[in-house]
Length: 218
Image (cartoon, rainbow, N blue to C red; front, top):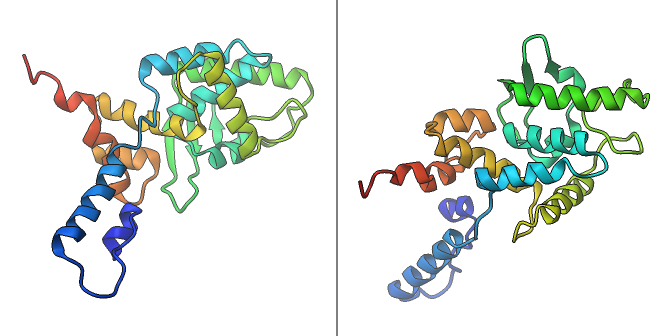
C-alpha cells in the first residue's frame, strides 16, 4: 500500500484474490501511464526562446527577471509569490531560498545574469514608488503575485514564444532539475538544490537525463 501511495497509484481493491496475471497487468499499465505523462519541462533552447519572449511584454524587465529567477532556483509558484526582497544579498551575490512543503531551505548563488536582471527590474520598480513593499516581484497594481497571476503570466509568455505546448510555472521548476541533471550534477546535489526531502522525487530528473546516454554510439 505504501509503495502505491508514493507512486500516486491506486492499490488493487480488496476482495476475492484476483488472478496474479491480472494484478500484474494493472500495475504495469499504471506504471506505463506514469512514464508517458508527456514532457513537463523546457529544454535549454526552449527556455531561451521563452526568456526572449518574456522581454517583449509591457513589463519586460520584471517578467524576464521573474521567469529567470524562478527557473534558476527551481521555485514553486507559491515560493515565488511569497519571496521577499530581504532574502537577496547583492553584496554576496547570494539568495536565501525558503522552501515550502517542508522542503530544505538553502543559500544559493546568484549568477551575473540574474543580478543584472533583478537590479534592472528593481530600478524600474523603485521609480514607481513601490520600493517599500516587501515582496520581490509585484504586479502593476503594487500587490504581490497570486498563484493564478503567475500561471497566467507564464502561459501568456509561452504563447508569445510560440511554443507548441502550454507552459506552466511548475514546468520551470522541472526545467531547473533537468538542466542540472543534463549538466552532470549528481542526484544528491539536485536534491539539496531543489529542497527535496525524499530522494525519490529527484530520481525523475537523473533517470531520464540525456547526458546518461551520451557516447553510446561513438
